[in-house]
Amino acid sequence: MVESRNLHKVLQLDQCGRCLPDYVIVATLAQSPRHYLDGGLLALVSSAPALRSINLSQCSLLTSASIYILAESSKSLLKELHLDDCQGIDAALILPALIELEHLEVLSVAGIQIVCDEFVKNYIVARGQNMKELVLKDCINLTNASIKAIVEHCPRLSVLDLMNLHKLTDLSIGHLTNGCCALHTLKLCRNPFSDEAIAAFVETTGGSLKELSLNNIKRVRCFSAS
Image (cartoon, rainbow, N blue to C red; front, side, top):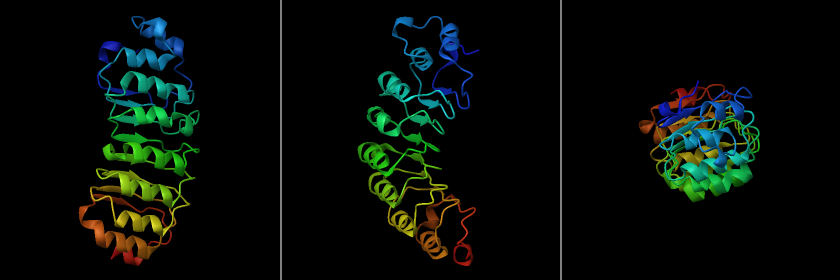
């Protein structure tokens, strides 16, 4: 049971999938202004105006329209948004709504297959100056161009997850070596980077890193370890 008086700053609905239809939320939050409702998400955010963090990961029925609901309701407050594996979302369609979230610092779009370089570049150019944590894991269409944009426009970025992006090359490691000075957590697992590129990166920036994940990078061997 969700009680709106307990919804303060964090809303976590990850893995709800198809088990949380709108009518359940509407019935639970009966005090919400029904005539303004556009699905269950609007009922929730309307009943929790102080929300700062929303986790909607793996909500299979979530559509692009829901992101516009968030932009309308929480654009000046929301700081964290997690949309991992929300395959019903069209990245191109939600871009204007995401840009409306003017104070967003944490964004995760992990596993959304249609996330592309154009989406990343356009969003980062508009809002990268605020970004502290960016999760792009399993967005398999991304290339070095996205990493270049991130390095150029995210001066405050401290956490970056690039796991399983098989189109990236050592050029991306070069970009990261020359930028993202605030970075302290970097996840590079399951990528085709060379041992030499990783070693050069570690030598240049390793002092500021607190966490570097290199699991299942087949070409990383002796240089990085030393």
